[in-house]
Image (cartoon, helix red, strand yellow):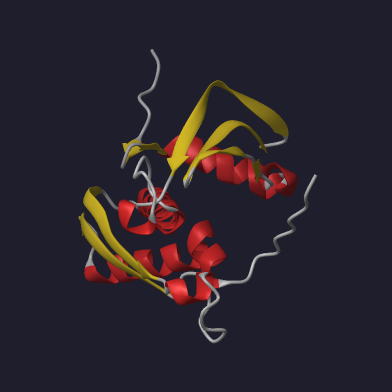
Length: 185
């Protein structure tokens, strides 16, 4: 008779522990490369395709490519067919925080019954439009409110929050400079 997998927060604990063990034994298995291809469609509308990635020592091809639309709201002269880049950044951050909370809580033995986020970010068009050289064109502040309902003790929840902030890849990416090389061709 087969054994039943231990699931916590939708995460298979045995698979999670096995992955951690494999990466601990062979650090190269922890190296991933995410890829996208993006194209401008019209006005502010663009589309990104995600069809392959490298990770766990091999290339992976998706059976069906994933698509994300990008656009601007009418207030920014767009057609509102998708979130703008600032909104997509908030989505990327909350998506990463969701994974980090659920996997970390599972590893700590904490069951999550509810997890959601409220996010806001600020930008000033004067930077984008080069109207004020003292204003950055990018996002200036991101605020995240975490709503977590779980069976952890207050001490466990405090450690979970701290662990998430130490280990969330997108939280780290947004808090620290990242090398970006842009070429034309």
